[in-house]
Image (tube, rainbow, N blue to C red; front, side):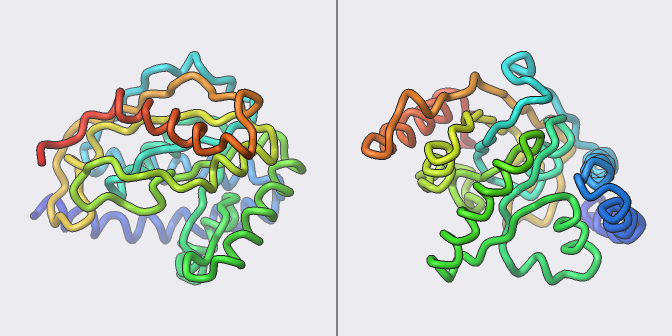
Length: 238
């Protein structure tokens, strides 16, 4: 518990220091390179002070300059800094619309190129996905990270995948890259009040090409991706 509160205490000034820098970075460099770098530094600091180590497998499967839709499983708040620090491609994430209004932190998320959706408004969410598709088309150096389950798993077990990432891939022609996150649930679960010093491992699998599927077979796209996560994810005991 002492470690948990120490991390929280240090997280606040760390965020207060870097968030304005990310916002200013967006003004200096509208393409978001500076803001993305600041986001990576923020993520590195979170992992460091939490005594959480990061390991990567499969980095050779992706091109740092290429554009992808990264899909990940989601069991912990540590998923975000792990992916942001571990994956060097310039990236943005889909986030709940409420986060955008958090002073400095939410504004910095916007500056770093994240996309905000309203989960309670299906039509608005679809409109945001259309906007994301347009932005990805305009910014070929910008990748997208989506937590395919839509929300954090409470028990660390793999949940069904939403179709959004796969529809977006089919619409844009951008490959999907599965990133299997192991160890984050042990570091901290959604309801846990402890942070466990441990190792999080990101397994970057080979890109899945949308040309192998169609809108009619998109469920196969979803199922094939989910099967890869079932194969590579080490779920905690039930």
